[in-house]
Image (cartoon, rainbow, N blue to C red):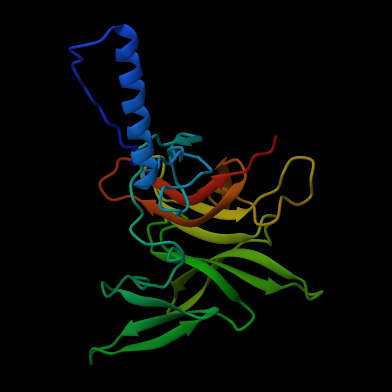
Length: 280
């Protein structure tokens, strides 16, 4: 953060003649003249408070503040400044495309998002990618991540989507899609979640060697069925054998642009833009 700086003038003079009273008069006149010149010249001082981790003021450029978290065992904490810069700009954090070996044949598949659908393309001998699977039409994909979410040693797709329940009410679901016995299928399907998922990522945030699920989901404030409009929380989940257990959840805030930095770090660093809510 660059702190705003006002201009300062330092004038020194030696008064040879006159008493102390005259010295004070001359000094005051010159000081007044300097102040008038500064005002006419357009000198200004900004009083923008510097932003820190969690500061609602954001950055000096007007961009939203970046918050960072690191985790150990069953808890996460703020990362003090300086905070690493996210690799992508605001609004670019949701899944677009990536490559991963889903079939285990040593040839990575291309996973791509097209609108509200997610498709898998296989690289053929002629060097062309061709579609081999796509999400059902009923799924309105929100985000996806590639990795090993269920810690079984196989690469799979973690996907979050909306789907209408039998009554026609849209519900948010997390699913794992993998390749089994020659075809792509749902290898784990979560029930509708109470806090709808907006963004997700996979990374080892606690350094235990297994990937964790990091989610940006709707916030629920204590004593209220629904949180303030647009409020979200950051939550970290750990696979326990047949589902996910909540490891940590942040305080509610206006968060977005979930990014996880894992390269070159012992534990991954979770980055979001925004600020915590003032619930007082």
